[in-house]
Image 1 (cartoon, rainbow, N blue to C red):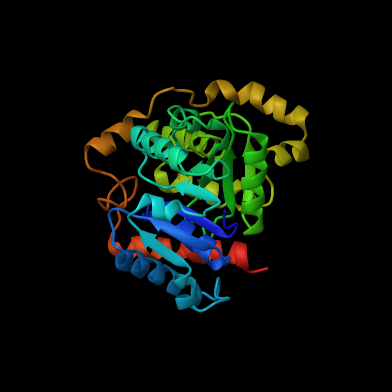
Image 2 (tube, rainbow, N blue to C red):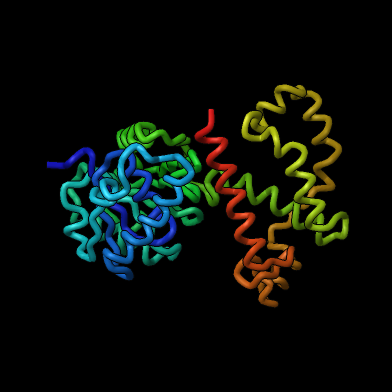
Length: 309
């Protein structure tokens, strides 16, 4: 019989460990399937993350050790999936790997178990293609860090049942997430399509010498970026009027970047080992202090907007 407060996470990396924390602090029994790390390594990583959150005064409704005791790590897939309600795969973004894992899960898990993929870019339909029971396979795209950013994109394929959609949305709402229903399995789902449309224009402005990277970022951070968490673009269109929005679009769309290929400047930067934080050089120059500073600011900001009312 399924334990309705048990969840399985396949993968112990950045997203797998983060999603595990999210469910564990919400009093779920969490079973992590990990093949690259030992239980001691996984729990040490989880403890470090929890300590940071506790010091910030959030997610501290139970002692760290009690939370960690609700988490079991195993390298045995059968053990990880026994008596679980949902399996969320968080393995690397490789279509074949995900297909194979979901296919195995579809074989060994009871028919009531939801199989979810945390992919951010891959087609859920393709991930489910080699499995038999496609009606219980769904996309659940959490955003990093999943215990701070509320959104989860719940992606429906043509085969995903309404029951599966309703159940996973209900589970996510019960742990205080903000699931959104994505009715079609399209590349980038909803949020990444919006995000990267903005990034394409931002990079184009730099590439064409209209403004430098710092200016582009400041233009966003100190104007419409400040209202985006309260006023979405379609709410804003209604606020200013759809007639004015239409007039603006009639004029400006022909001047916006519409290339179907990545920017040449981005290609050159990646090939020249200018990979941002990874190499301390990208659109900006970075060092360890600058990287740590911006990561701390982001963490504090996410905590403030989500936990300080």
